[in-house]
Length: 363
Image 1 (spheres, rainbow, N blue to C red):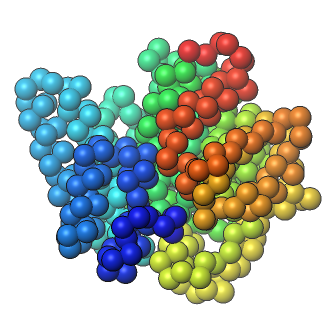
Image 2: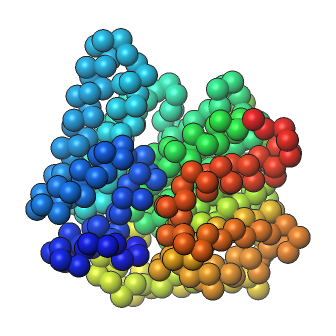
């Protein structure tokens, strides 16, 4: 589902598709050790199934964490747990549908992330007949000047964005990495899916922030990939959103022609009926004539993004006040700017600080 990757043409079709969807830049953007990312691509090129190769890497990092903990090296252990968490995240991406193996792999990812406590706090919020999950990261002071809620799209969620949280907490912002409806354990464990009212679920994270005394100040939201559509809808419907970042999202979602992408979308909706999936996507279309964004908006775009063209995202800009809307384009940027991760996160961290806290007041 991503841009062509050099050297994939000679691979078996499934492996080539996995390398396109999960290139080195994405693996490292979402927290894998660069050496592990190279090993994953090399092992799968050599014939090891994707989920097996990623799981082996995760187990190696968990053993490294165990040895470090026994030796009293907690900093090294935390690093290894983070690398294991990322490897488990990518292991589950080998499965588009919600198989038992996918659920088990994601549960292992959750367990590895939970080992990062207390620096990373697990949160759960009642919603409908289930619970929404997420991870809360606080700045070094333990009290935030403002809070940013970040979520992903169809396949990567929650702790996949721990590197984003690092950039925000370093600037005095709290960061809540949300697993909304159709995402993470909210879906795989609690059966909460994307429907016409998906923003009601994401709004529950605003409720959580408002109820936590450590999370003072304004609230920003950031949606990555398909999740940018949900962020725009929430910003248009909930006045508690003080600023919004949309990164690589379609304003008018459609059911993709590619089988794996269709399977991902069906899993997010929780329904294999293509008519039902189309019905939900049509209901989520963002129409700037109907949906207005009154808070500051930042649109991020990669010029080499094959999944979200600039014209696919331009309706979000038209929905905002021109004086409060900004766009940042990287001409060579991949989908969600995997290949400019550090600069992207610094830029959005500063932007949120300026709009939620005030220019010059964050770290």
